[in-house]
Length: 368
Image (cartoon, rainbow, N blue to C red; front, side, top):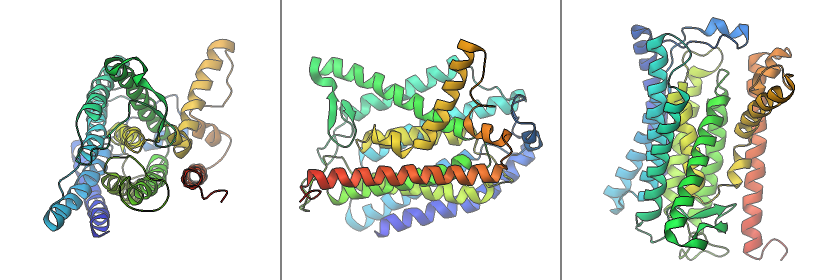
């Protein structure tokens, strides 16, 4: 518990101190955000607001977990788990890709950074490396860092091992690439209003922290009553998730409306990569669809808008993603953000209830 609290404190301190320092640096370098011209006109006043705030979020999560890992090593001799290292690799690699995209935007002085092909290639390389390592690197617990299959909660309902290990690895690489692409784009689309992505990420990673902590308490071979989970190093995953939630909380102080800084793709792609990796590491890939329900809602609104317009040349929403639709209906930006936070909180609560009911059912307690 001390390690968990230490990680939270370090993440919060790094975010609260590091963000204003980054704001000054970005101002000095004139690295301001360029606003999409087809967006709501009310957003044009945000042009020039410092960006690259995701740098602080990423460092806060990394340093928070690092401080926790150092304490556990000095106190108990525990070495960092590969599961945690791989999850952080997924976050940081996507963050680097986002940083390249953000830097290209400020250098070109426009809202277009990396090409679609360039971003896709980067995501493919990093996701593939993560997928292969997650399957082949042995963990200190002997439990899998990732499962070659699709899981709702813990056990795969569809295993990729039906055609041999080589085919299973290939199918898993494809699956992980889909998850990484889907979640990074979904969080990126959500990052369209001041504080929306930071606040909703704070809520969603709190949910992941609760799930991972419950799995750590009911780990297979741990001796606790009820159903146990074959998940590798869930306590490490708990610390990462909580550090992410706290980092977003601290960043929100400066990112709330009117934002003093934006997280940019550096933050949104990193958080999306972390969300995807957490779902894989906790074996909750399909439960994550509910846990990150707001991200799904944002992404699907964009898909529906584009698809429907191509078929009919008409629009379903006034503007996509859906948060812009409500802005154009007359809602203030603050009202949209707070109500969307509430929607994400409801999604997380539903996911946690489903997770607990699944445990109780497997433990024979639900109808006992």
